Image 1 (cartoon, rainbow, N blue to C red):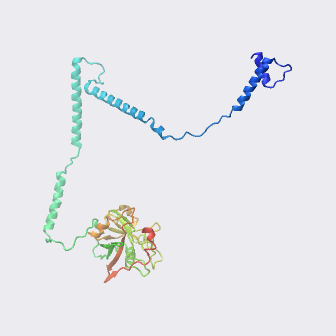
Image 2 (image 1 turned 30 degrees about the vertical axis):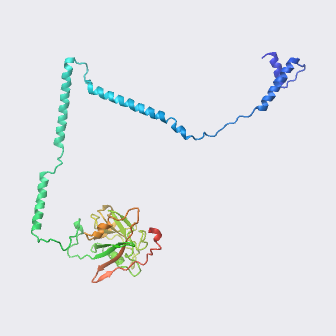
Image 3 (image 1 turned 60 degrees about the vertical axis):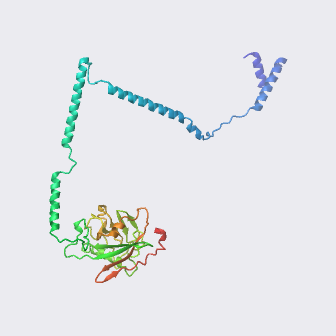
Length: 373
């Protein structure tokens, strides 16, 4: 720093000098003071903008054409590489098993020898597969056994009386365990089903296993007849219908599956009376048992074997088949919809005289309309 600069700096900062500077220096000091004053006049504080950039959707598509071009170029290069490798393997005669290069007059012989060995190995594997694979056609031994059974059936049928039109259809029972024992007379009830506000579907006949579950069957008959308290199956609906699986009904309290009927005249509810049968065939009627070992009067009708219901439901009867109404019922409904509403229109049974079931008076359709429509 020169002497002139030091003097000017001292004058600007307000330093006190006992002697006045020369005139030329005083002019320079005035000019620099004026510049400093003007500089401070127009100086502003810096501001930092912390706002994020505005969202611009077009920024996402700017590089899209370049990306597409790169992907196409990469695909083309890979295809060329694969074709090159394929052509090299098809036309070349490179054997990596050779430890050293053979003379040209023996290369062709060695290649033929390796080809013969490979063909022989493949033939052995194919022969082994043929000998160990089971035939897809039916064996003659099984056909002979089937013919013996068929021939015996023909002989048995020929010895019986010929009937062109059977008077009564033979009942279908897949599991012989459900055939009534000798000397046991099982009661049968007839339930007429119909679509609500529409025509009736038809009647199904149920055979009850009173010799195995007498108390549970008696509860079913009481609700079918309709007790004096107003509870009964007639007028209730099938609140659950799962096609080709099962349907549920018999809620005489709320008609939606959440009610439980307190049996009259009993100090203790009926529990799991007997798990004698298994759900091994379609058309079985069973009552679910709650976690408190209580039967609430609701029942299920199965449309297929359901062994997963064993030890949870008590089987009390079966649908007498063939039955057109049962076949129509198994195709109705949906697990996620209550439509169409299938209800029990009427019920009757024979006990020396026909007993017709009384209609349920405890369920008010208008009151429960908001529950199931």
